[in-house]
Image (tube, rainbow, N blue to C red; front, side, top):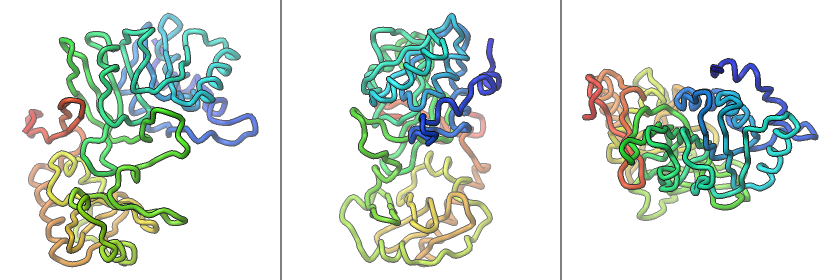
Length: 332
């Protein structure tokens, strides 16, 4: 049986991610993101795997190594150039237990179902019914899902088929591009789900449920031109992100600033207090909004600083949502 570490050692990444002219193809996920999802997927030798999103073919090669020659990998991508490229590359390398199909990934690939594992490297707008039907009883799905109706609230979730239904299991941080039904003209990040956004040389976006009502140019102007301050606590936004996704407080806001990067925090029509996800920066209009952010952080501390291991995912209809577990591991 091949381990994930051995698969990464055996597969030459450069052969897959570069075009003939030496340039990188755009459909590349980071090794860390791929590794995290593969660890959650736990492919066993001899299993049948459905991959949603062929991309460079690199992740396909890793899956083929994990499944072994007595297993099977079916890789589906909406872009015919990618599946044709991968098909040719794998033929040259004499890897024969992999096949490539061109189709909207939300439809899966019925012809070779059922599958022991399904993994997606792109984010569906809802949980595809086809995936459930094409998964074996006891099989696993690992896929990113948007868990709140605001931008940049994706996580990667493992689902297990139990008595014909999908039950959510572990949750890890992670996000991939949005799934489309045809070849995209451009690749969309979190901005596709943002309520307010600007393009150009310095794109920006902000997203909160209250922003559905109307656009406020004065609010945006303050967001774009306010200088960052030092936050009133030592943590960065990534530390609190899992907790905030789970409790989904009123006014929860995500944002991307053209100069200062990604933020999470609280906002209202009157202002905002947003903390950088990765740097010690605060964008805040006033103390009232900052106090709300401080109260969220204090609540997070009282709950013993929960991270992703304390989040429980649930399938609700065709959506995936998350909530906080109690300290004993049960959903609150």
